[in-house]
Image 1 (cartoon, rainbow, N blue to C red):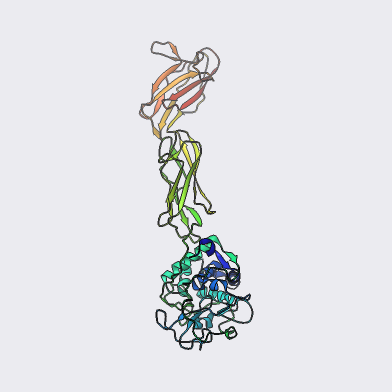
Image 2 (cartoon, rainbow, N blue to C red):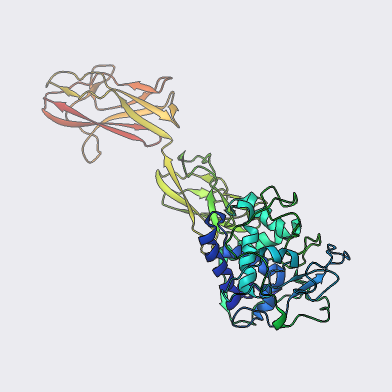
Length: 474
């Protein structure tokens, strides 16, 4: 198999034919939602994009592309239906052209994709439009996964074929395709068109290419499903699939699927207390353009911010491989000792947009006043009750040490203004207290003193959490 760069190249004329077919059907059958990438995937598997773009300027192949003889020997058994007009075989049918149409199927779906007045299965414009109409038959909407799979199975009733086409479809959807000169595209020797089988004699010449057959290419499909295509309506059961409906599995190597999108798979924000583990672990899913999970790909999670948060193990970066269904979950995130917000970003490269997770670290210990009335007292009087509550990780902190001190604006102990009294009735401006079982602490009576002004009372827990209150002496 060629390297990925070569696989992305599609001969210019062939690529133009796929895109013109998409454009025509967008106009005549907009509900089908056919994308050129699907035609490219089928064309890649069926004929290697017309044998690597071996076509003339009008899109006609320089020599007919013929599949194996459908005589029942390893393939379907289809007795000749066209008198050898399309495939040069008057005994049995053979798939014809870049999109490998059975002659009887071409008679129904043959189209004039290049507006030259002919319908030629060996012309890539005609074949691409016919393939698009065949895929859209019966009102299919190819944006629906079930209709998409039914359409591909209608083309070739093989699960391996379905998987291969879907993989190439994803490949072109995610990476696009580079137009390369005709005749230089990838041309594997194990295509579905049976290039390694002998060509019958005589072969139809260019002048023998059919110019009639089928309708006028207006995009109107019809008929019923043959029961083998997956539930959506498909061409008339008397018409075999374009490539013959054989059960053989194509050996065409498919490119590995790649991630086209990282999708959020967990809450996008979370909170933890200082020193604790975050309960939520960031999780994403790497999917193809159609939403299929991609396994075995690397997703990197990176922590940015100044809270000291790290992954389990101590690092700020962790690489995780997607599992069998495309999911990647970051290791446990451990909060640091600093409060604040930070971000965890998931990336996978290749131009795929990252996913950001917001995280916040809250203090394990909290300290808040109970009540909000202004603390004012007349000189020589007393302040009302002052009460506070200490919490630990959201619950009450019982028997927690708390220091209450009168301080200056610089944080030093104040020797003036309001004061407490010790057991002997002497003024003190610093006390060591302990919370009750419900986390509350009620301060002793605060005496105003005689000096008018505004003073500061600071409460401090053993964890260094502080609460500063203003005391006004009037």
